[in-house]
Amino acid sequence: MSLKKRFLRVTHLLFIALLLIQLLPDQSTKEVCTGSLVRFVIIVEAVVLAVSFFIKKPESLSLLLDIAGFVYVFLAIWTLATAKYNYLNDLLFPAPGKVVSQFVEDREKIWINIKSSLGTTLKGFFIAVAAALPLGLFIGWSARIGSAATYITKFFSSIPPIVYIPYGIALLPTFQSVSVFVIFLATFWPVFVGTMSGVLGVDKRIIDSAKVLNVRKPEMLFKIILPASLSQIFLGCNQGLSVSFILLTSAEMIGAKDGMGYYVKYYSDFGDYTRTITGLLVIGFVVIAVTFLFNKLQQYLLRWKR
Image (cartoon, rainbow, N blue to C red; front, side, top):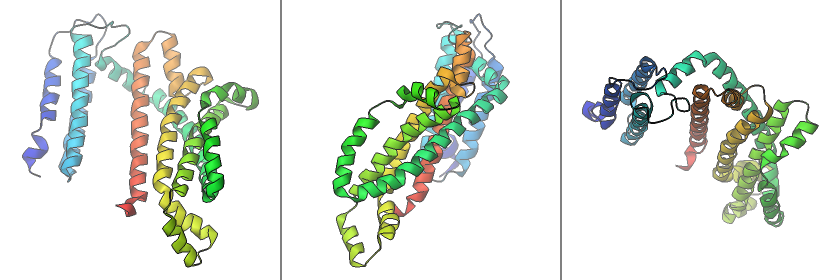
């Protein structure tokens, strides 16, 4: 790609427009921290330009620029509605510069809470995958048992895992173990159903060919059926991972002493909506980052299917 196609794009004009908006006089009665927002968008634009230089595929470059353009437009509208024209209640909706400044101020506290939330999520997720994957393989191996188990799993998976929190608090020693238990339930059923669906959907001709070659059952399960079922398994893992963050945040808002859900709930109780919005945005970024990394892992493990 030419330098013109890489760097002369609408996204970069939106970046300039966002900077020009900051020159308008502020009408908000609260502190807006325009300098913090300017520094933030300059860093974002510098990262976009640096990454654009190394991207080879036009589709990937377009995706990156579209995302950056959306961020610039969103920040521009947010700035106009808060700091510049004060259309929104500046107590409930702080200016974006103030949120950026608050994030920088609370970065150590936020990082501790992110590690707590991620640690809890990953514990429950990996325990659930370790339990659901082999169980789904063995049950799905039998078409008769698998068909019956499908209806049973529909019943149990329809129950929201968060309703088990009162029982978890009564039975488990710490609230963190309760959170891990909730994440386990949120992940187990999607992975279990995805694994069974993948096993039941394996082409019968592949299994018959393996039987003709006298492939043993363990090899049949883990070297033939498991790779053929990976697409459905990853689909279940994706569903479980997405739901896990939602449930964990809800659980942390009920009784936890750390984590991003606790961070949001704690400051919202005191009416500190700058920190509340900061926490909400951080949760969104963390979920996007984890999902992105998981999708990259999925693409790597399924590269043989391309």
